[in-house]
Image (tube, rainbow, N blue to C red):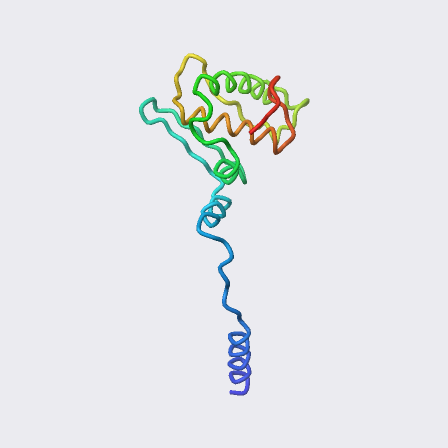
Length: 146
């Protein structure tokens, strides 16, 4: 009985000391914070049956907060840059003794003669920019920029 009383006293004290949580972030910031928790981006082109799956901590947040908005770059521009960066990426995957195999784990199957659509190219292009800036890598002759 005495233990139950002390337990009840501790619970009451803990509840009395618990301060109400103040809401510090406006709703727009809450959406961005929620993106931090979701580390998987899946973009699918249902018409062509292609998809891109990116599992990278922080990329979803970066895409929503720092990347250029959709429509800023043309599909042609992103396709031409993606081709160059995919070739370099795949060469690094095949050469694990020279490049960090934990950064370059899998090859990217990106073919020049296929129209993947704007959204797939947009996400892939921005992932390459994010990757280069985050890991201080260079995947081609162009300096990564936002």
